[in-house]
Image 1 (tube, rainbow, N blue to C red):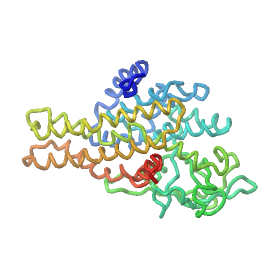
Image 2 (cartoon, rainbow, N blue to C red):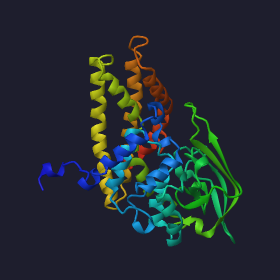
Image 3 (spheres, rainbow, N blue to C red):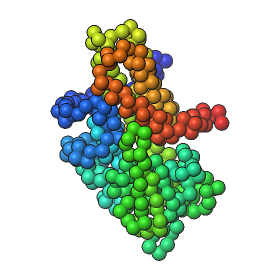
Length: 385
């Protein structure tokens, strides 16, 4: 292999690229009447009926084994689907977490009974999951988890609280990282993952209204919630290793690049018109595309590692950190461009989309791990700390 061969970009296989045409045709019809400021919500958008349509077409669980209702395709097939969903602004928030990480986690660590019970409904777009990681006062420091599950005759007795739990009020189940032994001072030791039925007595879910007017974040309280013994995923005390493997799915995909892409596409379309075109705007468009292109290549390369069964924790953290920087640059830079224009010259629909994305953009560098946490992971991976 030559030095140039080693620098070749990872390519999406042709059989997976072939998915784009039917997906685009479906989305063009399904979203033809949806305004851009609504499509901009995309992976926060809650639409169970839309998720079921994807399930009927085999576009959920596409990488999962056919024995559990999946499509048996490679990670690149899902990459193509997700990229198209986000670029079109499809409302995928209902099934997002279940498809992206809950089902793969259960298949990797769960019992056969858990796989048979939980995975097929996820593939059909009928079962939605949230993840319980963050806690009040802990931020992204997952090792300081205090929510505790105590073993008893019935299985596990769960007490504690989770916060910033996306779409918990719309989900049937949560996969929660909890302490099953030791004390918070033990950090990573004694942590486990449990499947929690959110309809059980003692579970309280409260949506949190954000500054955009949405309420997709929630706080979840557990007050003596009795779980069966089979709620445990994997081995007791191995939750830390499991959750880090899970986060590689969360941190590396197109969703860490394209949270602002509907706004960018809408703005770019206007910049291509005589009314919107200026040399400054054209340079800005080039700047953004040049920032996105190498990050997409990195994201595709991480997908190849996931396809090979690796756990690219550091690489995924790097993509997430750099990707959210570009996602936050897009609304800020577009705002600078638009507010330098003459009054009344900018389309109202474009300003509506900018308003929404500007309000949610601060969360981009919080969800999935803050910059400080991610950069610490990268530094450790490079042997710098």
